[in-house]
Amino acid sequence: MSAELTDQRTNDIIQARAEPITPGLTYVFDLAYYDYAWWARLDRAGCRFVNRLRTRTRLSVTSERPGPKGGHILADRIGLLPQRMARARRNPFADPVREVVVRIRTGKVLRLVTNDLDAPAEEIADLYRQRWQVELFFKWIKQNLKVRRFLGTSENAVRIQIFVALIAYLLLRKAHAAQNAVEAPRAFLTLVRLNLMHRRPITALKTPPKPPPINPAQMTLDLDPS
Figure 1 (tube, rainbow, N blue to C red):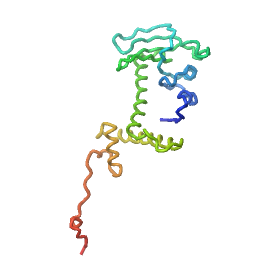
Figure 2 (figure 1 turned 45 degrees about the vertical axis):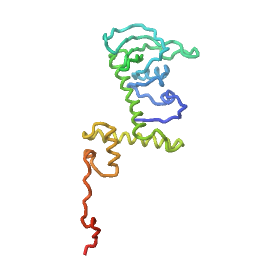
Figure 3 (figure 1 turned 90 degrees about the vertical axis):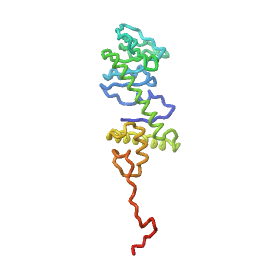
Figure 4 (figure 1 turned 90 degrees about the horizontal axis):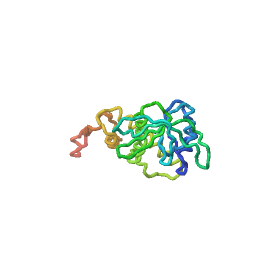
């Protein structure tokens, strides 16, 4: 796992362009990383990518594949991206791409684009569906690890708070995976908070701790050993 923090005015794609590309990996991203030149770099490195097509992007379809009827895959076709970009610049990605049109659970229709022309359409749709785990990850951290507000205003203070939250998240998930007594991650977090100052095995978090032994002499304040 890696993380980079940037200024709120910095576009996500700027940071992505600066990152080294690992040949052969699969990259799945959202519309913040919509950049034909970057897609071309990924394709040349032998990487597979899956992204969403913008509504106004028109694909020049060269072939269309029949998909299963009545499923969530509405269309599966191969074509070319627009040859020209903004300011009449030539599109650096001239290779064929694939558009997979999917209807998600909410009824919304998504147009997915990929340079993988061979994998089943269901696999491409599932790859993008898994990207939603990233959104759930940030939502869980904000709601449960108290990073809605920053304790400091300097760049260093913000970085420290965010990375402490990320470290805490990884430790919690690792500890949660090492036990079977508590299934829900949020319930596990609550139990960890309640037992934070006690040295107890994580498998016994749901078991109430034994009360400390009571000294009868203390109850009567008769502490004189004589």
